[in-house]
Amino acid sequence: MLTQAQQSLPYVSDDRRAAPHPARAPARRGYWRRLLPLLALLACATRVPSFAQPLWNPDEGYLAVQARMLAHGGTLYESVVDRKPPLVPWLYEAVFAVFGSQSLTPLKWCAVAAQLVTAVLLASTARRRWGDGAGRTAGVLYLLISVGLNPEDAQAATFEVFMLPWTAAAVWCADRRRWGWCGAAVAGAFLVKQTGAAVLVPVAWALWRCGAPRRDVLRCTAGVVLPVLAAACATDPAGFLFWTVTGSGAYASFTGSELHVLVRGLTNAAILAVACAGILPPVVRVLRIARTGRGELWLWLASSAVAVLAGFHFFGHYYLQLTPPLALLGTAALQILPRERLLDALLASACCCALFVGWGLLAPRPDLTHAQRVADAVRARTAPQEPVLVWGMHPETYWLANRPPASRFLTAGLLTNYSGGRDGGQVGERWAVPGTWPTFRTEFTTRPPALVVDDSRGGPYGVERVRGLRRMLAGYERVGEADGAVLYRPREPGS
Picture 1 (cartoon, one colour):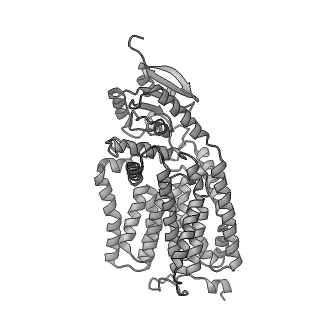
Picture 2: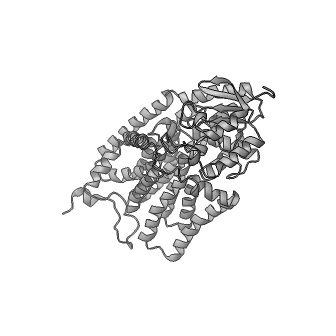
């Protein structure tokens, strides 16, 4: 016999012809008028720390420098390169065009809006499935756990934050059988970050499960393919394919620094588990007696977990992709437990959220302090339009110094494969992105930097370990240091 909990579980049968949603109480009027202000206030409160620093991590710095290069006539995937798709660089460029490029504050507000949109879409999905109360729970839970990582990962206005509204929109559209828009949302997630395409797994499951006719499958496929093709044609198709798909084989390898990377992955998983302390116990408890929600929610979580594993780097911001399905699964589990369990879950989540917000407000930022000191030294030794080469992993130095980069390769990682925290055997010129060194040498020759900053500080990609860079610096002399970074200027004629 079924237990009382199993009898009350709001699940959907696996029968593909079953009704898409269980019966629920009629919706109340004014629901969104009351809920939206609450979610907006919570979205702002959880991201207060993001406004406390000029920037939070090198990804923000990289995007800011990219946007400036694009504004000055650069072309994405030709003279402006990165391993990421184009939507976020275009967003930065557009915001800088309106508000100027001296501050990331407008982008931080865009990140707040992205989190709010994600919360609203999750609330709408939960409300459709389990009723008004579940909608409120899902929206609030998502925002509470969305900052549950190292502040450098959770508070930055970078790829994952802007990817999540698209993934939530894809599930929302699939829930309503709007397959063309669903495919477009999947494409949007991919065009923010490649791993956003993982949401295609639950979407495909939803297509199969509802017995969608062929025309709906074609609509969804067109929705996915056409925006990606349009983005490729708007940039450089060959460059788009290379930089976003085929050119990162060494970067995605597990070889090199295995223990270091594994410890990072386990640490970030543990941090996120602390943030989700209010919802993981209900999910585990309900799993023992019944199914929580529809299969695509579990597939969404599983495919997101695979996306976190992809590339074997396990950076904290990768884990943000897990938070929307976790919020919905937690909401589903809480629907069949006593009401006091819901209150306990919300209270625990709120306390954990307060802990992470406090961490963001109080934690020191030694990397930012270092980049600011180096930027001050660069400004003191160069004129505003003189190109500079920063050989390191802090592209934000260019933005803080307000100096143009001498190369399209904004980090030493693209030229040595050090990016991703590699510090083992796969670091060096032979592991660089294919074809980058001939281009780099040409740039160095045709437009020599007025100042070279060796910011490796003993790293495995230091000048003494990279023969090609040592040769290029033969015409330069050491002129000083800045917080451990070594500064080089061209030698005077005859010296």
